[in-house]
Length: 75
Image (cartoon, rainbow, N blue to C red; front, side):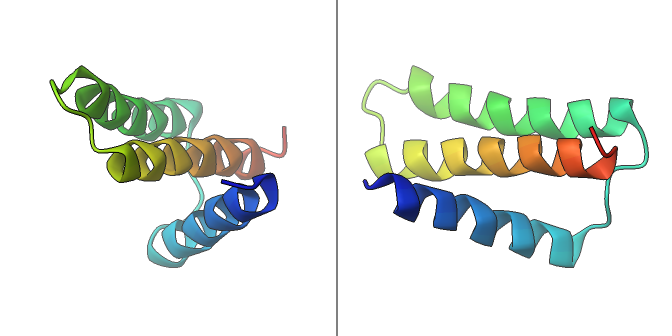
């Protein structure tokens, strides 16, 4: 997938998540959400036969939550 398409998907996911949930209230909350997304990616990686679309989608969610973490605390 082209880099620009990846970036756009990450930003779309970030916008979707921000529309549903406010910024993180604490570093702990941000870490917990980010870890949950990483755990979901890891669960897909561990499958005997990974779904490449699901892998991509989970990785996009990880990237979006990492950006949300940075934006939530003006880092």
